[in-house]
Image (cartoon, rainbow, N blue to C red; front, side, top):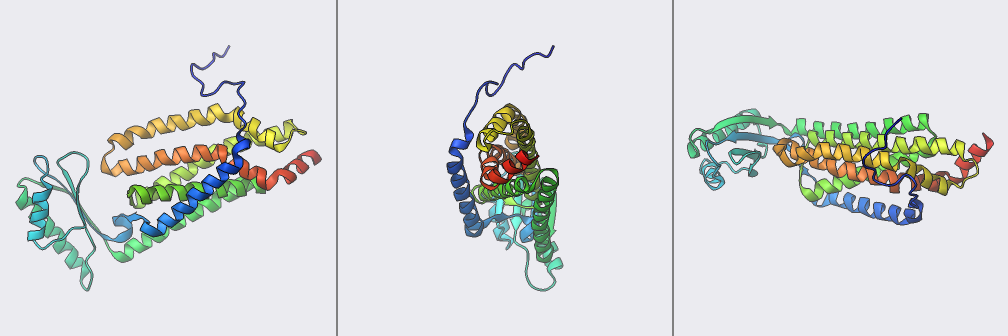
Length: 312
């Protein structure tokens, strides 16, 4: 005999009328996505080293870093960094410098890296340089293009997968919802000013995969109920399907959220941005599975889905 779970987000007999607020949900989602697109252009994303080109030097000082002293030493050496900031512990320092322009960029880049090392070592004796990376402008533009292509290709494959597994209305509704999720996440990046680099592209692709899985679970139940309740209005059937999968949806989302939360709090500069964007994407993807994907399906397929079910 199976025991009942100790905790459930909603009672099994609870029936929430999600479709009642479908118009408001779609309007709010559209407004947020439009605002996010505007933020993408102004002020725009804060591009990381991978996409804007430049030099990153990470170092560890013997004691808590004196950033005023480090900046003064760099200025005295004729080096004007884009940012000098802490990451990880108080001893960890990250210095960002724009990529050099003109001829012989490789030699200029090496000269800048050596200058930074000498300057911070003189300002804070005993400082250890942990990492020094440089990305040229041509390489960064190629990486940016490849990142966008990866996102586009992922959406196309999701469209094909859901179209084959379900029907046209399911596929189009899912991809439109995923695009709305993606634009909101990009807007979040523009507001929080996390650096947009290859790690963030990986975060966006992970969010797309998670959100797709979440929607497939709901769509599976909708398809089952379309065959089971042949006379039930589609609006009521969608409400029933969402309520039946609600505990699973919220439980899965909470599990992933709690797994990513420690990374956001204690992951350091490398993982904090990635995990924070993941947390936002989990919330957006879960809410869109309930409030956006199903209303879009109702809007696009009410007549056709019911007609085909009756015919079958």
